[in-house]
Length: 398
Ligand code: PMP
Picture (tube, rainbow, N blue to C red):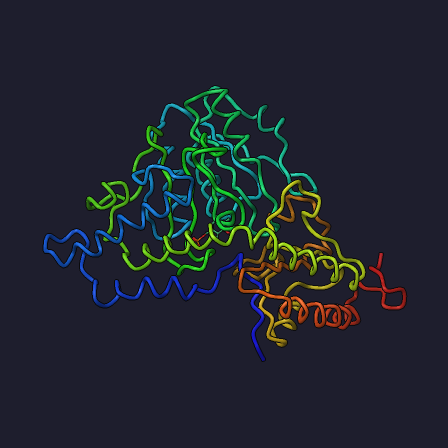
């Protein structure tokens, strides 16, 4: 049975083109790029070229503004703690209630350290209010950190507009965005619409590069201090011997992501829309979380399936060779239901039955057909056993 992998917001398969360009740096060109002998020139040159490639992909920016890191989590930590360290006179941070834990937990930590943190709420569509953002800005606001796109629902946030407003209000405010789910799915251009963004983070493993490599953009002139200290690598802004093959890999993955953006926005969106349409038509009492948001990632479908547990659905899907994910309890080692769906006020019975399907360029019609064939039966069978489901009337017990 062929595996149908539709959990691409969690991680992606490594593209063969990416693996191919990485290979020589594990074997032939393994040298430390900082070494003085001629042999080390090849890995040093590979890093320089990778930085140029990523810079081109992000809107033709100056490559010196890019650092390679170990993950998006590290990039977010470096971005936020680096901005906080560099601006000790300011004590207020604005973020949202639906950030990935690699931003949300930093917000909570900053509160413990005595800073004021505004976690902007979201409405039932998963969106934040620009008015609420404007009202939240203060004379001592140090940092704004709003993600470009949410990993659970795919809801996208107006980062370019928020950045413009923040800078018009006060040039000194540092603007950070977690772009981990945006790269390859939305245009990301730091020279045009995102020109007011100072710090931008993403990782390789969401764009068909390996896990364990990330990028942090730090705009020239931004008040920011290095977070990881040690050697002189990355001009002293991120110490540690460079992970040459992975850096080469993430650059190739960025190049492919830009090349495939049109496919993502047409063919992949079409597959997602087909799944959404057919699954909501065949399954009673199902809603789409984030459906009415102004912009949603083209690859993401988050279903609220009332009356059953997401884990049970995942287990049954897995028996049919389908890998998806759930926003409900226990999926990622946590006992709490999704903070994102809770912030959207999704009802209890639907948070627990949430199912996320996230596609990539490697998915096709046959994958969608398998899911459309299998999921409605799984849901019907589980509902038959559920105390929350009225089987006679085919609706939720109230
Ligand atoms: N931000 C977002 C929006 C994400 O989806 C993820 C990964 N789930 C991360 C940050 C963390 O990425 P990494 O695994 O590279 O640390």
